Length: 82
Image (cartoon, rainbow, N blue to C red):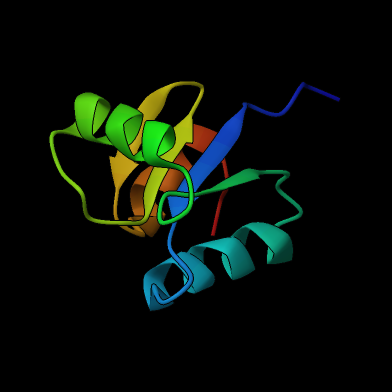
């Protein structure tokens, strides 16, 4: 089995798209690391530096940023056929 790409999702507790993205990853059995940018200022700055914005979710797949819950792009980077 091929190794799964590294997935990190930057979230806040109030973000509904973050919850939808996490639910999607769980449903597709994709392991991910969640970083709550409302509690982690350094992570928030890092996310801002990578993407130029503060909106969440920001999903990193092997360090390639996806802004928002962009399912087609997520599927493409993870090789998921929907």
